[in-house]
Structures are given as C-alpha cells and as structure tokens.
Length: 280
Image 1 (cartoon, rainbow, N blue to C red):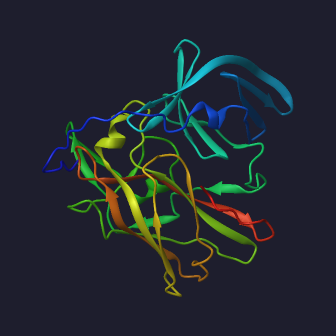
Image 2 (cartoon, rainbow, N blue to C red):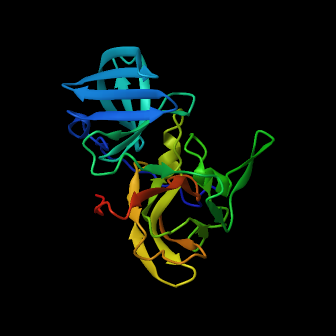
C-alpha cells in the first residue's frame, strides 16, 4: 500500500455502528436457488431457519450481540463460538463468515424496498481510470475495476493515483429504460473479515459527483464513512444511453495508507410503478 507521509495517531471512543435496536424485532429473508433462509432477531436471540425446496433443512437459536472493530461490525453468537461480519441498511443485510463469501443476503420482511426486484452486481458494470498494483512478499497483488462488482471480501477496488484518488473517475453503463428507476448500491472502504484494521488504515470515499455522459446532468453526493449499504437515487440524472461517470471529489484519509478504497458498487432496480424512497 502507498504509505502516508504523516502517520496519524488518535484515540477515540468506539460506539457501535448500529445497535441492537436496529435488528431487534426484525426478520430477514433470503431466497436463492431453492434455498430459503430466515433470520429473526428477538430479545437478544437470533433464530436461523433454512428451507430447501420447501422442506425445513436446518434450524437453531442462539444469543447474539453486535460488536464493532475499527468501523467493521460483527454479530457475535453465543459465547463467542462464532462471529459473522455484517453489512446492512435498515432494509437489507449481508452476512459473511471467515471464508469471505456472503452466506446470507436478504430483505427485512417489513422493508420499504420491493423484494421482488433485486440488487445487481457485475464485474463488467464499471471501469476505472486506474487501480493499484502492489508487491507483497514477492507477489504482485492488484485491485482492479472488476472488484467493484465483487461482493465477496476482501476484494476492494483501490485507486492507483499517486495521491488519494481525488479526481479519479469510475465509468458505468446500465439500461436506464422506462420500466425501472435506479439506485446505486455503495459499500465504502476496505472490508476484511480477518483484518478489520484495514478499513481505517486505508482511505474511504467522502464525496462523489455523478454525471450522465450524454446529457451532462450531474449531482454531488456525500458518502457516509461506513461499509454499510448506501443507496443513491440516480434516475433523476442518468437518463441517457452513453453511460455515466463517478468522480471522486473528497476522501476520508487513511490512518496509515494513502489509498482510497471501495468495497463494492451495484445497482438496485425499482419498477417505475413503485414509490420512490429517501434512503437514510
């Protein structure tokens, strides 16, 4: 990684990025390839149920608590026998075990989102001006634009600019047809199950400018300093057919490295007949 010239040392009190109040009383559901998974949070207890082709396949309950480590949130189950990395919004949740593959991604059953639609991720959805290539233990490691469409961790896109990436562009293209409204799905920073410290040590996105290439419409968007899911409405400016750009305007500085990272980017498709929402 590109080391910062000046190392930053600071002390702070860490508060949970999200408390039990956000999860308590909620049920999340995921349906993929015949496997339906349900996770319920109630009175400090997590209940997991899995159905395969309609038949109950697995069920268990355990206590849980939310723990934050360097900006990354985990669900700690039982007496710390298992830990899941969690990325969520009020309406959607990704859960990861140590292998870095998402084993659960699903909707809150009371969501304002339309669960019949979908978040879409693709390695071919975005291209970038640059990306970082570094050598660690005599091995070259790259962080290319394809990583923007990779929801497994830790596979962030990292800009390859000499500085912090301000001015670097990401180019995207998706069908902005009349049937759908679109939101960008944004997960900030370097996210690693085993190395949560890499989130703060590396830079994160603070502000971006989204511009329609054909029509020239643009807007600036502030990005929160969290890997949790952020949804950005873009159909108000992306109405052309030649794609769009995302320009990095500001960054949150890393405490050790002068790299700016994005965990992943995707698109959420919403039927035009569905009501729009202001994502908080």
